[in-house]
Amino acid sequence: MLPKRLMSARSLDELAALCGADLEGDGTRQISGPCGLAEAVEGQISFLTQAAYAPLVESTGASAVVLARDVVVERGDLALLRCDDPEEAFTQVILAFAPEVPPVPQGVDPSAVIHPTAQLGEGVRVGPLVSVGLGATVGPRAVLHAGVQVGAHAEVGGDTELHPNVVLYPHTRVGERCVIHANSVLGSDGFGFLFNGARWAKTPQVGNVVLGDDVEIGAGCTVDCARFGSTTISEGCRLDNLVHVGHNVTVGKHSLLLAQVGVAGSTHIGEGVILAGQSGVAGHLSIGDGVQVAARAGVTKDLAAGGQFYGYPAGPRRERLRSIARTQRLPGELESLRGEVQDLRERLESALVRLESAGEGAPEAAIDDTPPEEDQSS
Image (cartoon, rainbow, N blue to C red; front, side, top):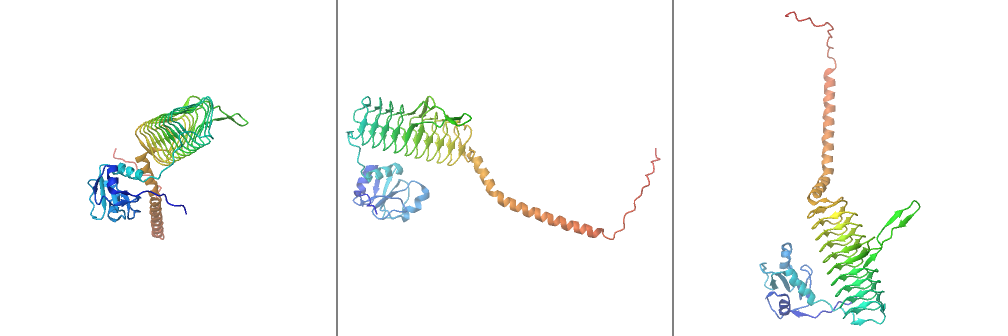
């Protein structure tokens, strides 16, 4: 069994000052760490941001809770840290207990391979077994963790951090203050093949990948280089783990692509777009600004700006939810209809039996073949 991370206890006075909260309770009380309301035990601190979880405050085992100023709490044994923004305040509490992570040492590790033509800015930290290729540039204060590969003529902006085993193919450009997590690959070939009658022949992919400033990319992501030109992830975008972006895609500023999203080639994604987990976008489409695509939705056509889309093929959220609701009701409605049809059949058969019974033994009507007399009134 692995040992737990050791964290120093902190007083409630210290935590209240750290997150700008007004303390109700004993400020000398020592807190060992943060925890959720339902799981917390004596000596821990928790938080409340959603009204749905308010009942847990009355039953939590925590010693203290960070919450909004107007929340009513009946317990006298619970210390309260009241503030304007409990989410942000609790983030500061979490950081106060965060375990120390050793930084990459200043300078260049002896095992790193830096090409003589590469340029490293002031204050760069280069970890073990890093490779920086021909003509590449790394901006000031950038951090390259162990095993990072920076290809020929690639560019890494200042204050950017590349975590272990990140690979930047040649000519990839990464902006300033970016974070790229472990094992992500930027600039690998786009998926381009043409069938020539005998086999799939590769279409040359000679473009690059460009990341704007303040972009964060999760672990295990792949962003393909363009067939020509650039695949672009614009300023402020966030990619979750295991996201794939195809060649010549453009992602607008401050968009979010959640886990396992896939975007096919040459699609344009607008600004402020949210693609929820496992959603997919076909190629050569346009996704308007502010669009929200629900988890596991499949986008097969252009989407107008500002809409919420759901299902496969993705359509307006309200319309798709109604369709799902109708589909879920359908088995019961069909069973009810089957019963009604069966009842009508039985009634019809009963009526036919009665009609046949009533006709037995009745004299046949005489048939008069005599033509009617003409009207003599005229």
